[in-house]
Amino acid sequence: MTDTNEEGGGGQGGRTTPEWIAFAMSLLLLGGVVGLIVRDLIEPESPAQPVAKIVGEPRRAGDQFIVTVEVTNEGDETAVEVQVQAELVLGEETLEGDQTLELLPGSATEEVEIVLPEDPAGGELTARVTSFQNP
Image (cartoon, rainbow, N blue to C red; front, side):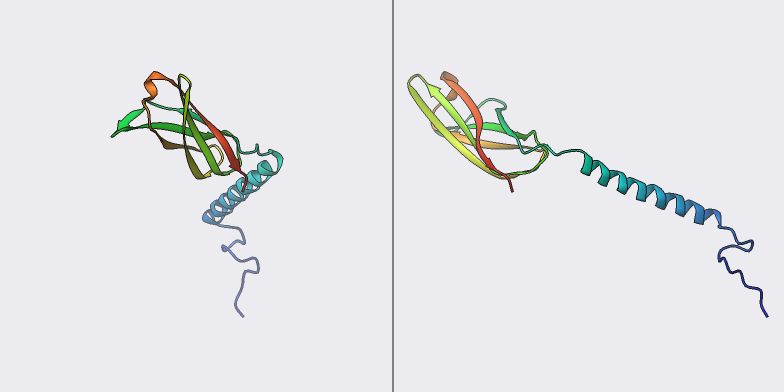
């Protein structure tokens, strides 16, 4: 009859060093995953909150002007169909241009370009988010 080790593993019934290392790494990985799940359950997510601001100087493109607008979602949740509007006030005249972002993930920043028919240098130029949806 042959002598068998009922516990499996090494000759003395213990685990080998590589087995202990693999076991420790598995515990660390499992602990990290559980920690992330617990954090997501405890921390409330803030709703989508996209905001817009003009970056850089408007540039001429033929007889029109292009304004670059940076849109940042300051919330944790995703915003969809984000409507961005640039408004140029020249004396009594108000000109508007708009652009739509289909998707803006939480804490993300995207740039859009809005075309205006007049030079913004002589007026007051502002940008804002006019609407968005929650998915």
